[in-house]
Image 1: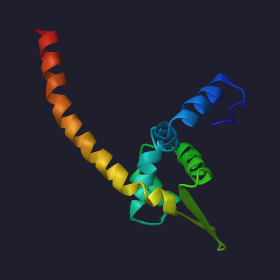
Image 2: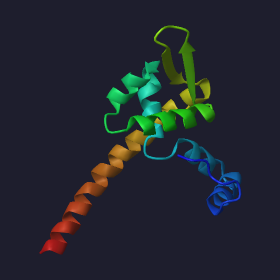
Image 3: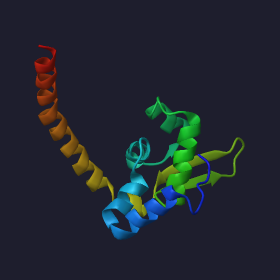
Length: 131
């Protein structure tokens, strides 16, 4: 992902949206396809890049690298480089990210309930449209 221009419409919109609402700000920090999934995988403790990649097989190495960099920049992931040959790098949740664990657990429970509730309704709607 390249750098966005400081005065682009996208950047200006993001600033306006996130400055006005703390919830929107928080969602922007952990939103996207991969960030929350990466954070959830780090919930159990430190992982190396290859271990994260194995736990999320459909993410490309490039995307994983980019997402980890963003999460590190935002202070949600702590990256530790060990002076070894070959170099070893561990990733772990920062203390502020660990505060999110009960929140995403609750959100996961809500998602399961919603999926269960909405799936029969969607199936029934499709059957009605096919008839």
